[in-house]
Length: 272
Ligand code: PLP
View 1 (cartoon, rainbow, N blue to C red):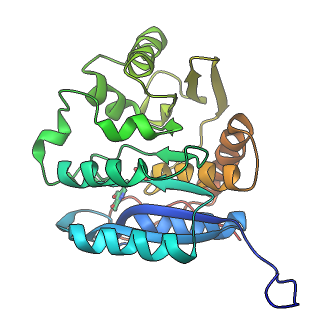
View 2 (cartoon, rainbow, N blue to C red):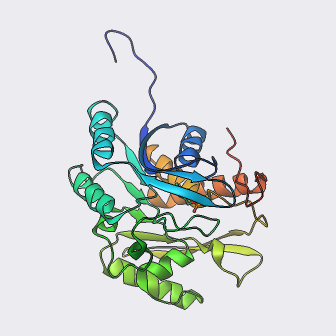
């Protein structure tokens, strides 16, 4: 209520992520997803990429001061109901976000997509050491849910993740290191041609999620969109399991209508 007038409002979700100039992933995908879910998306940009569908030509980090300014400005007026974190492009930025997240109430869900490389295979992080993480970044302990794909799960744990048993073992390793819940995205698996198998695990429960595998090479932005869709579902009040299922349904619908953009992989469609 503002004055004596009741005004319509929307749940606010923050996307802390990089800009993809190609429009398929990063902040651009996050905001389209949040709009589709009917929440209000705010963006805290961590890095700007000069990127097409075939290559990442340049990555420039936003300064520490600018990231802090985005955070403080939004917090004063547009505080989040849920947060999605994508590209965090340096160790210093990881540390800064860890410090900032520690100041928020723990009731705000934080979905972290541990982005390391772009879909075209180019690296997105500045510290090449981020690619082979010796220990789990402190930041990931603030995740209500971490959403690695198979290459990211392998990089985060140093383990092979080819078989279902190996995926379970690697996920347990992340849970033991203090991550509260993990959703392993099976999109990169080559074993099963008919199904896309994801694995959702917390200390409370573990199960596989199966959905028909949608045969498209236009999958740029799927990781970003999935994490944003989960954050949006949580902001709308769904429990985590339901938010994950809703997000998967959203992704599958978008992949069924995916389209080519440039010479490389196109992107999923964000339907209103
Ligand atoms: N964030 C940014 C800024 C990117 O440019 C990319 C990929 O190019 C990603 C995240 C990860 O994208 P995806 O959702 O395809 O994993």
